Length: 125
Image (cartoon, rainbow, N blue to C red; front, top):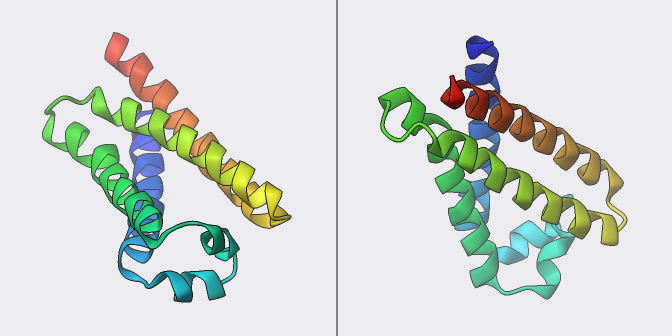
């Protein structure tokens, strides 16, 4: 079970890192032109960058606390925050009719739920 949680956290951290780097460093205009980037049209570049920074922090929070054994409870807390972020992403993409991105966000949400459940269960043992 621990191995599955590590693999899940690693995959989700890679997704968060990629999304975070993109949203933090790619200009909003280029994001808007990319598939699934239509949501950036009605929001500020600062908000997009803030989401990117949150995703970078999530990438760190999913791995380092457990790897360093410093406040490992932050891993499931980060996973719960990712669930909330994905719920917002699903609503946003759903409003734009981008249902394949809704499905992708649902997969990320399910993976984060698994990590949160598994790490909270492990913290209680």
